[in-house]
Image 1 (tube, helix red, strand yellow):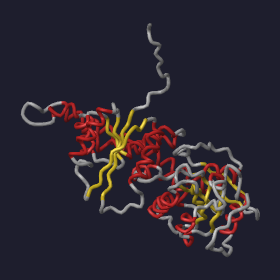
Image 2 (spheres, one colour; image 1 turned 90 degrees about the horizontal axis):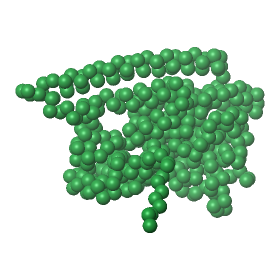
Image 3 (cartoon, rainbow, N blue to C red; image 1 turned 45 degrees about the vertical axis):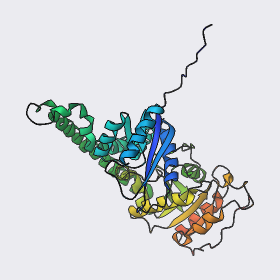
Image 4 (cartoon, helix red, strand yellow; image 1 turned 135 degrees about the vertical axis):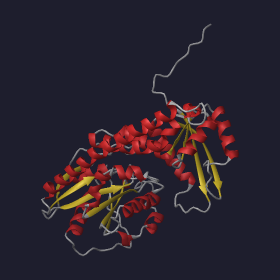
Length: 392
């Protein structure tokens, strides 16, 4: 009797193994386990199926990222688990990527390429696609030689001079030409944004920007404050395109508020540079609303990532209101919804106000608007040594 077989009609998801390294001498407030947990989320967002992990602790970085013994172990796992893709938790050099692909016999990508892939899937507007195009092209340029590894035998020496080297140089020239074109278009976008900002604010209105870790609920907060309908999704990087709206504070003062792209651990510098036109809204802001997912076990680490990125952008001293969002996800867990460790680890001196909210339930939105007005109006700010929750 013939067996009935069923086949999945869903999209193919590459089987992936995640690889990470902990360097003993390196100072990173994220543990390797936490970093790989986030890498797993990124892999799923990109459409992969992470089925295994491999880690190594080392005294110093290796030229091949992991040691020879670990490469052999990884090679066995790739074969046993029928792995399609290996994903490394740090950015690999072109030589590291080429060496690992040669030894493993499968596709090798790093954290930077993975984040770029997720961004590329999320980009919808012309501006967003341009910025991703720029970042991906800059990432590709130093790796072009590896794309032509099948022509290595034509790379040089007697009897080997020929089209291989010529093709690589041709490709590099084409990529540089594309980079120049995309940068010119982004420069035009940036100029348009500056003009729009001047017209929108008339040079007088206060500028407010929402910042925070990806999936912290910035868009939901934005919608509650402005009565807008920006897309809200429980996914990484659901917002890539900056949205700006006018808002009126309780005292009648008009301001503009912008929802910006989220940050992530080990955010590639080329991506920050590519999104500079978008992030200029943050640089020009008079007030930042730093949104934190208070339900995340990594809330403090995520806050630190955002603070570091803001400092790198030169806006570390801009007045900030800390918005502890997603209160509804922890309010029913105990009588004390805010974990004491989170409260104790917050450096309250960094913030003008601290407000607890649930954008989904609309908790704390009125208090947030009042706090915005107080800071914008330069009223005396009370620094809270003890947080009291809004009645829910």
